[in-house]
Amino acid sequence: MSAPVLTEQALPPAPAAPKRSFLSGYLRQPVVALSVLVLLVMALLAIFAPLIADEPAGAGVDVLQPPSGAHWFGTDDLGQDIFAQVVWGTRTSMVIGLAASLLAIVLGTAIGLAAAYFRPFDAVATVITDVMLALPTLPLMIMLAAVVSPSVTTLTLIIGFFAWPEVARLIRSQGLVISAMPYIDGARVLGATGWRIVTREILPAVVSLMVVSVLLTASRAVISEAGLSFLGLGDPDAWSWGRILLNAQRSGTIAIAWWQTLFPSLAILFLVLAATLAGTRFNDTRDPRRNGG
Image (cartoon, rainbow, N blue to C red):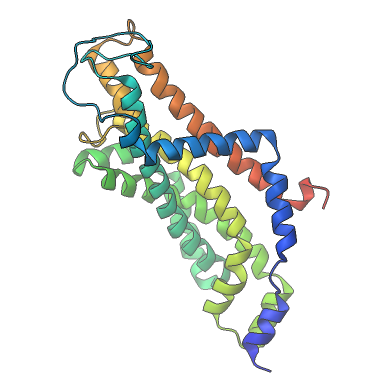
């Protein structure tokens, strides 16, 4: 019997029923259900933004109008609708948050798994990760964003580049535990290559941790994007929640037009809180020690 067949038999795939039970138990939690609902609403706003509101442009006649039936979130000093700005800002903020998170997950997972299995690479990867974690992230992101041409792409690359070390450390820690399992030694004895062991044995065992990392990293990426945009380092051609706050600060209407900062701030709060709660509860639900398993 060939080695690959024996390796797969040594680690059978999880049955479908427990997975369904896990997902149903996870989504049955009220906090999780509400968090997922918020994330779905945000995603729908980002996808269907052109159908929900026209992209704000130019100046209007209703200047600094408070929330009303005509303007749900009020208007700014140029007469532009704040609701439309928040809706279009949802698209930019979620795109940057999700893309930067995926970039960080890919880099962090690759480095973490390589460090966990290939021991000669572990020392180098650990040093690089520790150095990256010790760097002052925010000043460096500000410096890079100020040097390069501001755009959605550059912000995504900058935020994703500085977010991967935390992911790498988590994946490495879990990968070291999996690498010490007896079935990994059995796979080596049967002649499985290092690439096969990493991709077919260790990687599936850390997928749940990757899901958690995507949610948590995306929430931090949204905050980073809002902060950079508020400092004037965002894409000037794209609406984002940070840009709405920047416009309120530049116009000097923060004290007299509370609605101009309230609603984009609430959007940031709801998205970050929902992603964080969904990620942490997912981590708690998959841990058998917290389920009595």
